[in-house]
Image 1 (cartoon, helix red, strand yellow):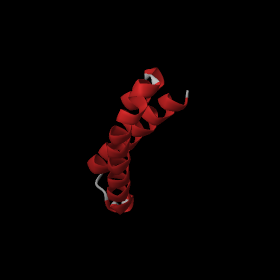
Image 2 (cartoon, helix red, strand yellow):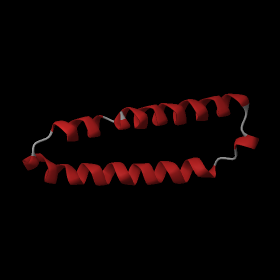
Image 3 (cartoon, one colour):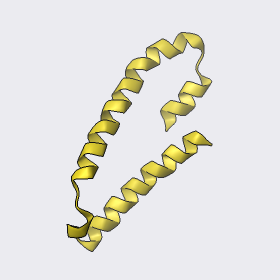
Image 4 (cartoon, rainbow, N blue to C red):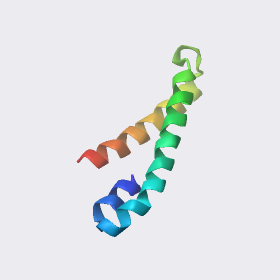
Length: 68
C-alpha cells in the first residue's frame, strides 16, 4: 500500500492532488472484489485455488501493513 505510506508523508498541499489517485485505487478494489466474488472455490483446480489464495493473501498482508 504505497499510497498509504505516501499519504502519511504528504503535506496538506499534496492531499488534494492525491484524491484522484485514491479514487483510482478504490475503483480497482471494487473491480477486484467483484471478480473475486465470482470464483467458486469448490470448482477450482488445486493450482487455481493455490493461486487465488496466494493473491488474496498478498492483498490482505498489504492491508494489514497499513493498519500497523
